[in-house]
Length: 455
Image 1 (cartoon, one colour):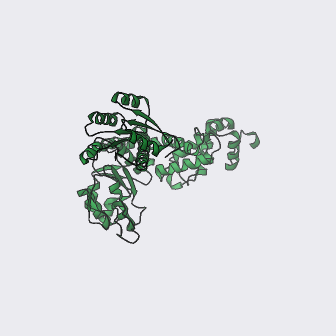
Image 2: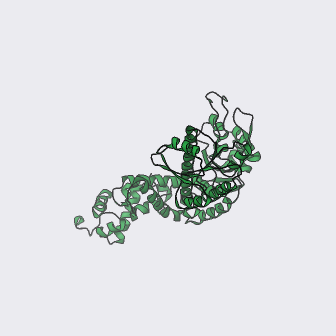
Image 3: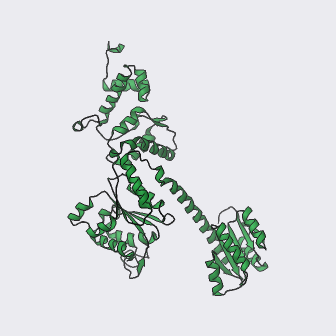
């Protein structure tokens, strides 16, 4: 238990019950005693309690009414029922009505302490899960997705509709386009949102282990299986499982996956007990599954099972209107992680970002901005902090494949021309200092007849 004292509300506890509780807790908790429903309701309305202890007799309907009241208004507070009765039907009724646990009187202090610690720990875990889910709701809100280009707007409209169904979804698109993120958005905006969202990258797990990862295994199923393992499908029961890079799995596992989709059941590796699950499947791949089928590498019947609701994500170069707002979102996120205050990009830096075709898509853009944040010493990302491979600008013929330095020189020349070759004004336009511009002018060998040093 933690150092802070836990607050307990004790309802109609007999003297020997109180003695056991006091002996178990010592000075680790504070206790409030009430003996009637009115006082009980008054206390839980004004005080935050960690656990409620409720003594109930077989015919005490008032106590069960209070239990129902507590479960309705304070569902996160565990209620431990104590009683001198050990009738099975009575215990079952208490648990069905929402009691966390049942203790028969008299009980030992050690037994009470164990039950109390478990109840508090479970409540803390539930609070943490609720917090994480509330945070995820913000992260995965469709309204927070950058969708300025028509191509991605159409995708988001479809995903909003698909989220309301339980049908299987197949997301296709290049690496780094956001398949994993959008699968989370689908789940957290669906009716399954309060149940698990399990992600598994099929390409990162050796084929020999993938079956066990997906379906679990029994103890002794193979060398090294020293205990039973629950698979990802079982963990996702009631929720959603995201199978990333589904095009990488073997034909043998494809067959077992097909059965899960058709029958909602499977056996663990090395087991014969059939396990039924209620799981929604979202699959993703950057491969052409049609070509995989023609080559005999992917089952056609499995393809039809996962391709019920197809979604194709456009590459970043196909959504140019999204690049600048995406860069700003990633900058804010990266600055939070790095504890740095950077307000934006210089015009020249943003021009470089917008001109690149981003073959690695959003993932590459994110990595580039993260590195720029680390390197940048000012409050604005400047060109020198941006490190990306050689690329060509849309304004430069593709066959030239000009490097970043060439494109940077063109930007400088354009800024100088637009500002009548006044270096101070051009530097302001580029978002860099006059000294930095002067350095680049020398670096690229830029000259102009009107400059005194060139006369």
